[in-house]
Length: 227
Image (cartoon, rainbow, N blue to C red; front, side, top):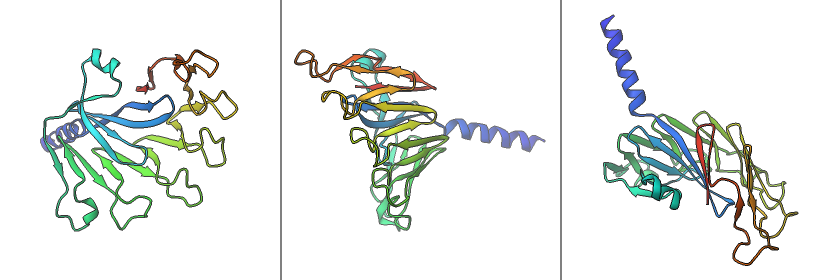
């Protein structure tokens, strides 16, 4: 009985210590997907691109600066380790540990669409589209942990083909080529949140800028950042 309690305590500590949570999803220029940001139990933010590359890591800015500099991070001054002298040379130079969070990658023996991409980060596992015939999706993230991710297909409107379409149950839409030239491809909605933009008919300097809609929107526990 005592041993069972010790094992249970160990797994609880392990789960908390190595858990990561999707915290931010960022879009730049109001149209282009920028990154998924995960926060570790050590409060480290790790940014990953839609095609499975570690972009950067650090700590959140204090609230005032965070909202004036969306998505910017403070440098993380703790332990960071890299893969070196690996049998699979593809791994060499890639970040291995950030704090107590371990990162693994798909090796050179995997499908060519997967090679070098992040495979796991702590307790979060990543899968990617590898099906042939749709180059707009190939190599992009298919699932991250429990969240499935979809993209607009190559046969869809040119303004948003290849763009991220949904994260979990959150649907994302964009303005199409039938809309004003200044807003084509820009975000139209994230979930129930609607975005409008100044068009080419508006005053110079405003065209293409955000007219209405929240720059920071909490949806299903994830903060979407639009800048």
